[in-house]
Image 1 (tube, helix red, strand yellow):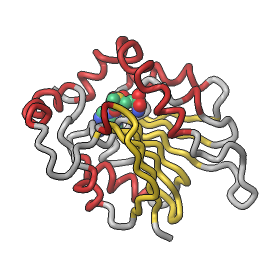
Image 2 (image 1 turned 180 degrees about the horizontal axis):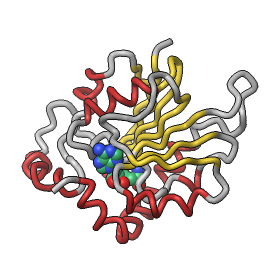
Image 3 (image 1 turned 90 degrees about the vertical axis):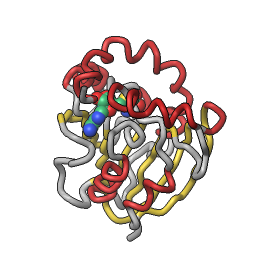
Image 4 (image 1 turned 120 degrees about the horizontal axis):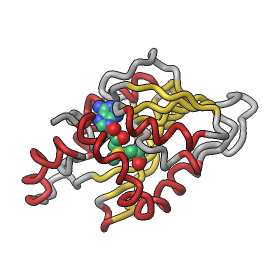
Amino acid sequence: MSLKTSYRFIAPFYDLFVDRATRAARKRSLARLPQQVLPQQGAAKVLLNGVGTGLDLLYLPLCHEYTALDITAAMLARAQPRADNLNMQCVQGDSMALPFAANCFDYLILHLIVAVVPQPPLCLHEAARVLKPGGRMFLFDKFLQAGERAWLRRALTPLVGQLATRLDVVFEEVMRSAPDLRVITDEPILARGWFRLIELQKVQ
Ligand SMILES: C[S@@+](CC[C@H](N)C(=O)[O-])C[C@H]1O[C@@H](n2cnc3c(N)ncnc32)[C@H](O)[C@@H]1O
C-alpha cells in the first residue's frame, strides 16, 4: 500500500491522535519564522512540505506567502479550511520530487515528513534544492541516534513504513544527501529525544 492511500484513511482520525501531543513542539518550531515582514526580504515565501491536515497553520504569522504541499488530497482538503486568514495555496505533489523551481523559497517547514517518506535522503535533497541560498528549514521529526540499536523500531519499519511512517531514520545519514545544508540548532523535544527540532540553513 502507498502512503497516499493509507493517509486517505488516516485523515479523519489524524488530529485526534497527533494534535495534542505535538502542539507545543510545533509552536516552538514555528516561532522561529520572522513574525513580521523583514524590510530587506519582503513577505517571505514559505513551503509547508507534507502539510497534512494543517495542524501548523494556526501558529503561522499572517504576513508571509505560504505554499502547502501534500501527496494526499484528503489531508489537503482538511488543511485548506484552516488557512482562512493566510495567503496560502495548496499543491498536491510529492516531497521526493517537488514541483517547484530551484531556489524559490525563503523557509521550509518539514514537520513529520522527512522520516515519514520511503526515501528520506531524496526528500531532504529536494527540500535543499528549492530553498534559496541563505534560506532556513525547520524540521520536527523522529530520528534515531547514529548507532542506536532500536531493534523494535527497525523491525517494524518494513510494515509501519508502508502504512504511516518510517521508524528507523538516522538524521546524520540523511544529511549526507544535502551537503549544502548546515545545522544551526538541534534539540530533543519529545519521547526522550527521539523527536527533535532541527534548524538548517543553506549555504550562500
Ligand atoms: C505524519 S503526517 C504529517 C503532517 C503534518 N506535517 C503534521 O505535522 O501534522 C505525514 C504527511 O505526509 C504526507 N505524505 C506522505 N508521503 C508523502 C510524499 N511522498 N509527498 C508529500 N506528502 C507525503 C501524508 O499525506 C501526510 O499528510
